[in-house]
Amino acid sequence: MTVKELEERTGLSRANIRFYEQEGLLSPQRRDNGYRDYSGEDLTTLLRIKLLRQLEIPLEEIRRLIRDEAPLEALMARHAALLAGESQRLAAAREVCEEIRRGGFSYASLDPAPYLQRLSQAPAPRRSSETADRWEPCPWRRFFARYLDLSLYTGIYWLIVLLCLRKRHITGLGWDAAFTILALITMLFGEPLLLSRWGTTAGKWLLGLRVERRGGGRLTYGAALDRTFSAILDGMGLEIPLYSLFKLYRSYKACQENSAPLPWETEGVVMAQPQRPLQVFRYLAACALQAAVLAAAMLSLTLPPHRGALTAAEYVENFNYYMEQNQRYYRLTEEGTVVHCQDTGAPTISYLLEGDLTDCLRFTFEEEGGVLRAVTADYDYRYIGPDHQETDLVYLPQDVLQYAFLSAAGADSHLFQIKYLLDAAEQLCEAHIQVDYVGLVSSLTVEGTGYTPREGENIYIAYAPDRSCRLQARLTLSIP
Image (cartoon, rainbow, N blue to C red; front, top):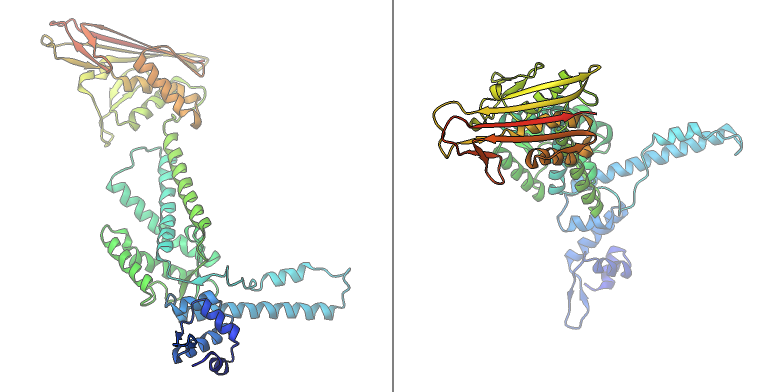
């Protein structure tokens, strides 16, 4: 079939036929003389293109149909909804024009507010084919969108535990399972609210996705609830290990191959904007922001619960906070003594080489007008028992002395000073020098009788083969 015959049978101009060829929608054979030879299939393709163009289907969507990258049913449903919205908008505009005409207004007397309000309730104008949303599988965009939403819900509960309960050790299968269950419950009831009100969620919006009814418009809350429940059950496998991977793989294959609607898309479909680098940038920025917020929350646990000017009782609570956070089973009393605390039910850490701190460690407090002004912590370890061996060691509880420093110095610190706070604590307890931190002057002195320090470590080695070995340390804090 020649191009002239094709023009007659399709009613399309030669220029249009050539254009569709250049767009890759037609691939006619070449005769020996170099002329194009159009087949019956080319004729059918052109007639289909003509029909779809008269329905105002964008050329990009037609190309996707020809390549079998999108189902015709979903495209027709989407386009019918767009045309219905356009029709409603034009009808609303016509009614406003007639009402203004009947009102006999002049330009100076026209009040635009009520008419603008009416027009704002009509469907928005159609966007151009380059920016219009369309149906497409996009399984990876949908996967990353959903799991960003899930991580946001999980992050909320992390923040509650970190900031409200001030718990640092929230790892393990028990915590992970609890966070996952709470996040799925929040997604189950929270996502339908977002879809019914705005048609999208945080993750979907960042990646240019939204959900709407097959006939156009937003889902009802009930329909969105059914959709989310089915997505969690059939798509995510309730986040059960291994089973969820199996479900995700099956959903990916079904979405990629367009073999059948996904179980949760009986009433709604996902519409996607053309993919752009900005979407990826926004997504990565959101992930980075979430990670930064959680990291800041974790860092905030480095600061004690009581801030500003302290009483002796508040200092004791700060110290015990650090001991609990770091799983040390001793607690400080307001009298300055150290007692065992092994009934907390939490894992504990102890160091046998440091001795029993209930016998070795004492605190004294000095208050002025009810405000704490000085703290002294005395560590005194004396060996009691058979003669020492040359291999016997004693461990200076450097971490506990750091907590003693942080309990006072941390009260005058904020989030952006944490690095300097920790550096000061390390410098004080490792270098044993006087440290001035925001006016708080602290010093640590260590003396050993019968012990010699191991170079570069916080361990002292016995060298006296009798019972005269003694290790003493004094931490003094002068609070402004």
